[in-house]
Length: 381
Ligand SMILES: [Ca+2]
Image (spheres, rainbow, N blue to C red):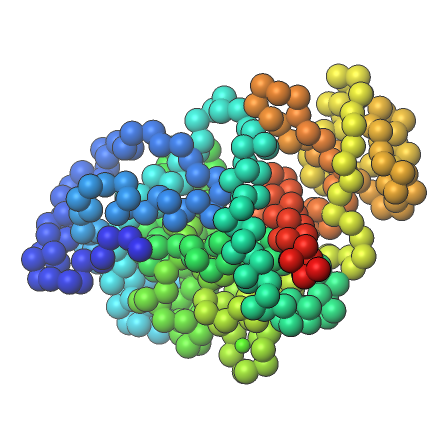
């Protein structure tokens, strides 16, 4: 858990106010803190909590005095058709989080990607073991989701493992604080700052709407620095669009209810075009010319090429893939200074990247889920 929030004492509250005033005075010229490697993966948020990064955590300042907050409250109340005084009151209780802003800064350029290292972070004994325990505890719900949607149990288990270590690391930031901070102060030096700030403003609106519907308690819900919540780390907009009631108890609770989380992850993939029975990818060997390789990698993860076309351009497919009827994407996973790993991704691979826009993420989810399933089957024998 992170540093306790500054409600504990009047002294802390006064300190917060003081810092808020100081911040208002200096915000125009504030310089970023020391460059810290951008955490691309949501699951790592938990290693990033203020309590771990600073020896003596300072109370987060209140945002209540910022004039922009009033404008923001008005915008969101109108857009989501919420009572303005209620929105104002809630946003007034948000606390500014420096580490949330910091975490959004772009990664330093030139950092080589390394699939082997990335994979090893997630496909490792502790996470597999936690996955086996989760699988055993929720096998019926995983099975039911697979039967209803065609999304494999292993894939759902892989997502929940990579996202939150099966609910053990769901994030330490109050979602209200994270989203309000980013809606006001998304780092302006980010290449897509305006677009991203607008996105977090929209997510904050959706979060308030969920709160108003009584789905969650806006003052206590915690999540990642980006405002992702629960076992599957759903953003508020995803909660609103894709969350389903997995155990038919009339409520959707992605924070505490594994059945709801499992069914909602499966539904997410269904909504992004999951095709039952279709594999996610094929391992391939590439001996394409540099020019052909450029052409093959240009569409990135979007399935574009037929199996025949890939073969013609120097991509060796396994036997099972040569008759694959759909389109494929050639996906390159870099391994630092070692040769890259290549896979041919299907539409289902693409669907996984809608959960988190990264082929590294998609492969880690697939590999972890398969490792968990294999471990379950091994111990079943
Ligand atoms: Ca439920």
